[in-house]
Length: 164
Image (cartoon, rainbow, N blue to C red; front, side):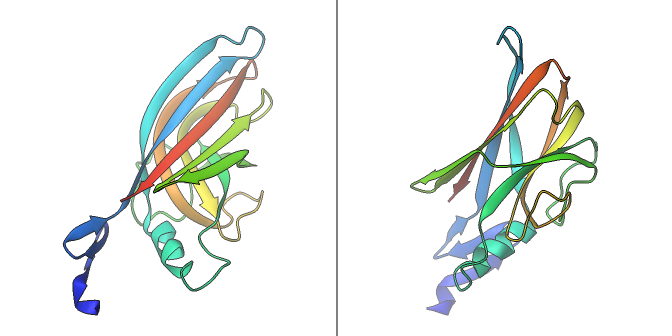
């Protein structure tokens, strides 16, 4: 019954229960020669409005709702619900590993020593018609991060998005 549902700025109320995606991003930077972990940190991420719209559209359109790329950028502007791209994207790569279990989606992307070098301040997950072209596709999740990666390092970004 449609009377059981109400709109809310961060999700949908369904019989007085808020359904909203939330998530974390785990960043690991390793020294490529020694394998020593230099950075091992977690950051909260925001599931932006464009991603929510795509997920809702996936109920009727099989070409919507698929997250395929991870990107990083250098902008210090805080994530906002209305964001549709990273502010200053510098690297983008296909997600290496993706899975879901129960109500949790996980994705992992590995950047080599020659990729994503610099002071990384933002990260995002993209899908729908996303490609290797910067700013393409739908932004689903965005996180403010603060890490430096050099050509002596590798970077692994692991995302966990919980819908509930």
